[in-house]
Length: 284
Image (tube, rainbow, N blue to C red):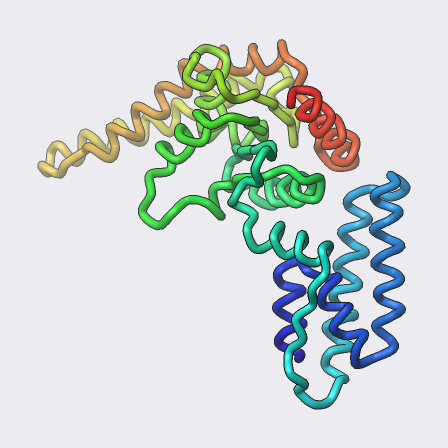
């Protein structure tokens, strides 16, 4: 039974794990009461999402500890009720949109994955269908093609704007295309900021200098490879990407300053994500 409870918790099915535990220990009833109370408080807006997540983590840990104290290995019990079936569907099949559901694609830089996952969990808790690349990209699939295919779908692009994303060029590319191309006319573009460095004076100059330094290193390696008759296609691709970012960065930053980007950094997370959810629901 311990393994079954561990798997339920790993799948995000805490309520089912507690229901199973309650059949073998009265202590689990206290955990159930705490879970139900926390869920009720969050749904009523009495606590923030971050506090609700901490409460769930504490309950999950206590449930795992309690499962270690139960002797024997009874036959796994299949728990069937409508609520648990809905939770199971939500956590086991997060990549399969519900019929009539709202699809959200999260665009982010890999260095910002932690906050991207936090946003994913928040949106799924609010019944949005969320696609995020590290869950959805298949082995050997081209990342750029994957992103472009996602943008062609109906729904929303939630783009995480940060120093990391602007330096990488991915969010820059997406922002530029979302504003200037009809390729993504089926998607609503929502930028959220997880840091506001791009608003600071001198940001563009600083980043262009960094890009120039990277380009200079590439130019040197290209010349050295040519001397040694080594192919340079990979370097030319990187040169093109950095050059495009260098040329587009001022325009991208100008656009981001001109529009209403939602701040979700630090203590602003719950308030900002509430605004994101409201915006998406108003566009449904």
